[in-house]
Length: 239
Image (cartoon, rainbow, N blue to C red; front, side, top):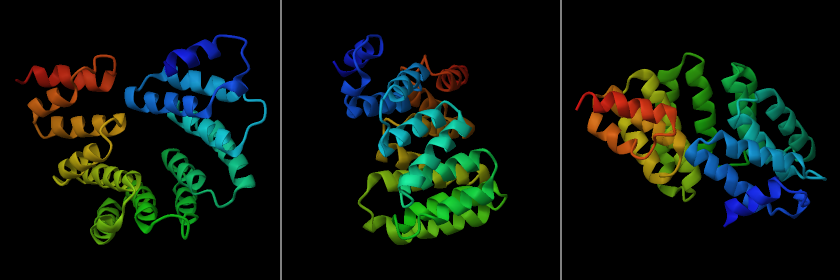
């Protein structure tokens, strides 16, 4: 199968250039769904062996490096992307997330601003509101994004953009202690059921609400994911 095929290539002398990028994307998707750091390392190993890195390869490297919490090298990869393609929305969005997690909120908002005219307003609003919430303006950020979601979501046919907005709203609502967080996590789970970040966020929210049976359901077959395994153990003790 695909995973076995990539394992064989990574451990052999076969030219990495022969590995389809779709196989590497599949590794990254699997890593996002399982939290398996080894898959991220394997994907990055394959990407680093590419003889002539394209813009897409730099983006994939940045994605893997971000997930491994190697933020400075990830930003270096994005700078190379933006030198070649200054209108790359994916690069600006990822750069905004990296600057935000490093606490450089001015740079993060600037990156969000670069999305204007390149992506739907809901994605720009999600980007900007997430940064604003980290700057101590969570109430304003939530109100702005919730209103924008209400105005635009019904016309948005990209599930990825809807998911991004739902997760942003869920995170900000959790930060505020707003009970609407449960609704947003549920919607985000429906939009992208396999996403690990969403699953962990939903389980944490359920735990803090005292919905322990819901936590147990969300954490089934997750013994190898520390955050979910701990929530499961604690909730089982409450049932």
